[in-house]
Length: 356
Ligand SMILES: C[S@@+](CC[C@H](N)C(=O)[O-])C[C@H]1O[C@@H](n2cnc3c(N)ncnc32)[C@H](O)[C@@H]1O
Image (tube, rainbow, N blue to C red; front, side, top):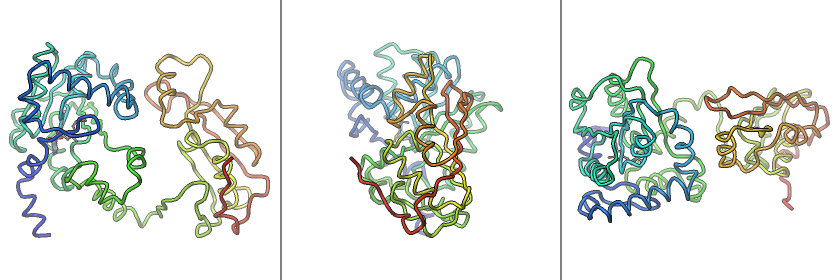
C-alpha cells in the first residue's frame, strides 16, 4: 500500500510517462513522432485512423458520433484526455465548441497541427500539468466528455480530478463517460482482466481494478456469474420470484433465446415472471432510429410481434412498445412473460440446446 502511494504521489507525471503513446486504429503511435510528420502525411494518417474507428469499425466510435453529433452542436464541450482528437474534431466539425484537455503536451500539439493544416475551427487546447493548472481552465462548459481517459489511475486520484473538473461544468451540464464495451473484451478472447488491461492499455492496467473494486463493494448485494445464458447453472438460485433480461433478447437468435427462456422458466416459482426490454423495430422509423437500429451490436432486433412470438410458447405475454427510454427516438419492447406451461425442472437447469 505504501509502495502504491509513493508510486502515485505525482499521478500526472506518472501517467504522462505512458500516455504520449495513443491509440491509432488498431495500434498505437507516439505523438512525439507524429508531430514531426509533414502536414499532409499526418493528415492522411489521422484521417485513415479516424475512418477505421468511425466507419469501418462502426461499433467503436461511429455509433456515438451518430448519437451525440447533433446533441453537442452549439454546446461548449470539454474533451478530457482528448488523445489524437478524433472525438473533439468530429464534434467541432459538427458545430460544437470543444476544448481538448490532455496531460500530454505532444498529444495536444499533434491535434493542433491537424487542425491548423485542415483549417478546422471550433477547437482550443488546454494542457493539464496537474490539478493546480485547472484554475486557469474557463468555467461554464455544457458537457464534460471523457472517452477512455480517466480510468487509468486509482479512484482517489481520479475522484480528486473529477471534483476539480466538475467546478468547470455548468450546474445543469452533463458528464458523458465512455469506457470499454463488453464486445471488445469478447473480441479480444475474453481474457482474464489483468491480462486484458495490459492489452487494452498496453501497460497501464488500472482498468481491471475497477471491476475488482465493484465486486468488493457490491458483491454482498448479489452474485455475479459469468456463463452463457442458454447453459448457465441456475440450480443454486431456485426458486426465483422474478427474472429480468434487459437488453438481452436482441443479441440472441431464436434458438438460443428460446433455450434461455426455458431455462429461466424452470428456475422460477410457479406463476413466476420474466421481464424483458429490448430495442424494437416499428413501422416508419425516423432515419436516425433506423441507422442506430441497423448498427446495433444486437443482431436480432425484432418487431413487437416477433418478440411476442418468441415468448408466447412459454406462457402468457403482455407487451408494450415504449419510445421514451432514451433521449433519441429508439423504441423498446417491454414484455412480461408469465409462465404457464411446465418448463424444464431444476434437474435440467444446465441443459443447453444444440444449434442447428
Ligand atoms: C486511451 S487515450 C483516449 C484518447 C481519446 N479520448 C480517444 O477516445 O481516442 C487516453 C488519453 O487520456 C489522457 N489521460 C490519461 N489519464 C488522464 C487523466 N487522468 N486526465 C486527463 N487525461 C488523461 C492521455 O494522455 C491520452 O491522451
